[in-house]
Amino acid sequence: MSRRRPRRRVHPVGAVPGALESSQSHVPLNAELFAFGPDRCVEKSLTSLDEIPKLREGLPVLWLNFDGTPDGATLEQLRTQFNLHPLALEDVLHPTQRAKVEPFASALFLVIPMPIAREGPFETEQLAIFLGADFVISIQQQPEGDCLDCVRERIRQRSGRVREKGAAYLTFALIDAVIDHYFPLVNALGERVDAIEDAVVGANAPPDMFAIRDAKHELAKMRQAVWPMRDALTALTTMEAWFDLEHRVFLRNALDHVIRLIDMLDSDRMLASDLMELAIAIANARLGEVTKILTMIATIFIPLTFIAGVYGMNFEFMPELAWRYGYLFALIGMLAIALGLLVLFWRRGWFAPSVFNAARRRAKTL
Image (tube, rainbow, N blue to C red; front, side):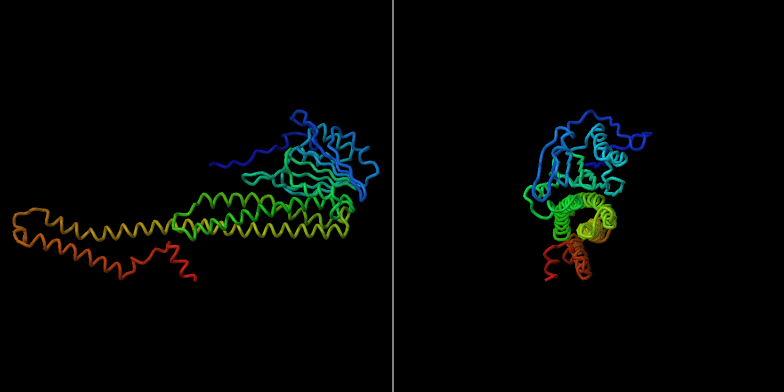
């Protein structure tokens, strides 16, 4: 099965930087609002961005989440209402899915690749986050499913620190939720690599190189998503204008989680590469064993064929042709030569148990 790189929208050639014109038609607004403080929380699905000032009145923190990329008109309205930079909104309209951090005058812009919660191969979507003084705007690339339900529940149930802290802590909570959802995926892929290792090392059947290749492909995609997050979080831990000392401590913890993910992925990638080399070596060794067996068979039959060929020439004055025991003598001679060659092969160790015998290998390790 061929694997093609996913086609992604790119900046149109020759377009003005920061332009929000979009070729897509009008997209229905799919946004939810959380406005909260220590004592009160408002949650509502929005039908218009004009509702925001009234809904958040008297509440210190606003979280506006979009399920799916809005159209250019909606992004332009966000730019006007929250003073967002057009270059950041352009990255929302044309996703890159690479983690990065861009500080602007009125808002900090972050991009985090978020794993898509569904069965099948590993895929990510872009989660764009705008952090302002008292607001957080998150825009997801896909319209359905995300990793942020745990943050929503903490806001609703007033658990943890998110209701008591400001917008900066809410941004950390969103980032931390995304990072936490990578761990089950990386652990599952690590168990998959371990199962392939057991199959390659412990089984007598030929190794499945395509399974190893698929695992390496998944590991490469995960590492491509996780690695840039390390640089992005490192940059966040130095931005004192947006995160105070307490928030930077939490960000360093998130950075530590990302480094652990990278270490796990690198370890699994090295193991998968070693398994591919081992599988190739095993395939070559199996070919060598087959060649050895065929060589022994050919070596045994070469002298037998020679004797049969000599006595099959039917010349008139050949010796032993008229001898009563000539036929028996020829057969005994062939048998003696074959047995002698078999003894020679045995003394040279060519009949030793196969190196691929799993039971023999396990017995040696006990």
